[in-house]
Amino acid sequence: MGNSIKIPLLGTLDKVGGDAATITNWDISALTVTASATSGSLESVSSGAGSEAKFTFSSDAASAVSVVIDVAGKDYSAGQTITVTIPSANAINGGATDVDVTLLLEDNMIAGGAFEGYILLPSSGLLACVIPDTASYTTWKIQQLENDHTRPWTIEIQGGLVSNYVDITKRINNVLVEACTSPNSQPSLVLPEGVFATDLFIG
Amino acid sequence: MNNLLSIDWNAGGELAINVKDVYRVDQEAGATDSILCYYNIASDTGPKVWAVDLKFSSNVTAADVTQLQAAVLKIQQSPNAMVKFKMPSEAKLDTTTPFAFSAGGVAVPK
Image (tube, rainbow over all chains, first blue to last red; front, side, top):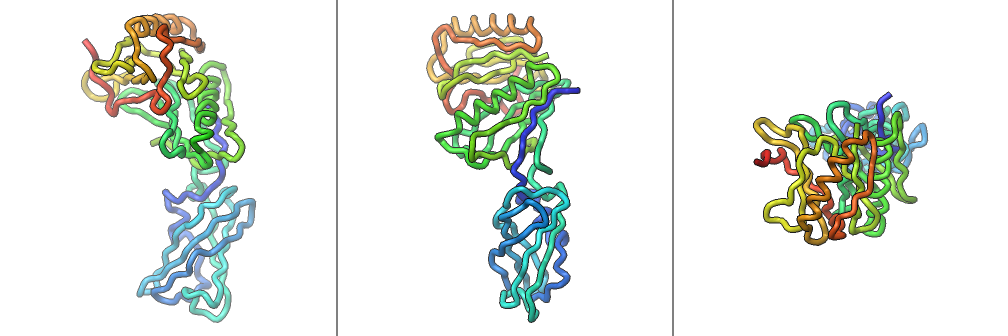
């Protein structure tokens, strides 16, 4: 079995990929749409552990609806259903009753794809070093080198500060060292209290 | 097989650099506080390779470069190992930019 680094993820909705912000993935069939209206930011509930996500629904002059993720939340996973209740008094709700709109979550709607991500040690290249983010404290990289291309593994961090970036960097450095030096090891990144990895991707 | 050097970091503690496939260590031209480690890994079409720019918080010396090259060659004889490397001048990796890679790599030095 090859070595890898396990990155526990917070389970936030992927605001960049946009799949949770694609209205066709939502069930809004119960909504009677008022044209050229916006709902404002609405709270949601989920059928699982996911919480805190907020959404804004808007309609154009032709009553076509779009949705924006205002708050990406946490602890979401594939299979959970997010429900947003749009009250009858809301501007976008043209009906007489409160309406539930729902989204069934799939992996590609969640940052990093799931509750955890893995950085695999390449067979033909190498993981070179950790590059800390000393400007915004949000984006750490583990630099992978291979023939003809570079693959910077990017770990997005929530809770990084000037006061803890050294600690974060050393913890990422430590799992890199363990994965590179211990045969058949899959070390897990443990971040300081109050700091979370929200996404893992190459780029 | 990986070969790591652990070098003092000016922000505190140490940071590791994987020097597997590093074949040459040079002081970067025009930069008194940087050392380039060249990897025998093609970075682009043409004779370009990957190199990591080790930036330090103070100037490096010829002895730093020589000893770092020696440490690279030595650790490459020990698969999956890491050793702590201390610069003779006691320079430490830069606080904000300890490592930097050039997009597309660097031309192979002569």
